[in-house]
Image (cartoon, rainbow over all chains, first blue to last red; front, side, top):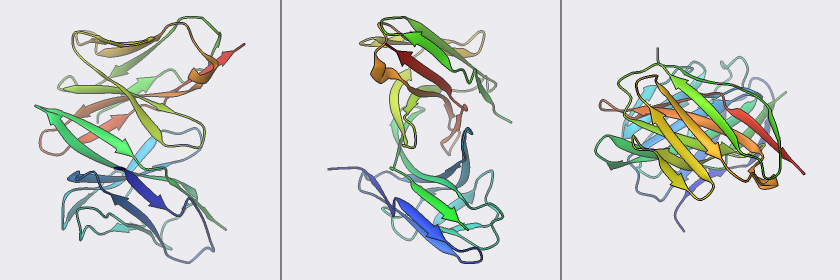
Length: 115
Length: 111
């Protein structure tokens, strides 16, 4: 069964603590992404990685960090510097369908609550 | 800055109705477009790609109008299970594939 897994599904943390969200894919996709979604809002890009050992900041990278040591894995750390960390975090991966066309698929998400 | 605009709705329709959503995009160089479906508190799931010639998948039809820079999604014979938020996505590459998502259009199908 190929897909993207994220764990845990729900995560609760105290303010001031760093927390790492897991994302694993066995689709052999090169590119991986992290998004944040707040209630009633669209998806906002945090970080993305096109290849192993390389990643780029998205629109809202402040207070977050990532690593891409393996093709299958793209963990996201939410640091204590992130002002409003409570949100729904979605990991995605994409592959080149052909020509200039790509398709992107999402994991089930992690719902983080920080109090 | 690339933008994708959608009417947030909600669109409230009875079962069996036909409903259409439009979405406008700002990047005239965009090459690929998609519709995703997102259920409440779940991840977005790819519904269909949108091709220049238009494409159909069962009750769903997607169309692209490059001149006016919009894409549309038509749902025929609406089912209760079609109730969800529909996200419009514009994807351009130029090296790195970074899609731009609309905020979504909410559809509620009632009995």
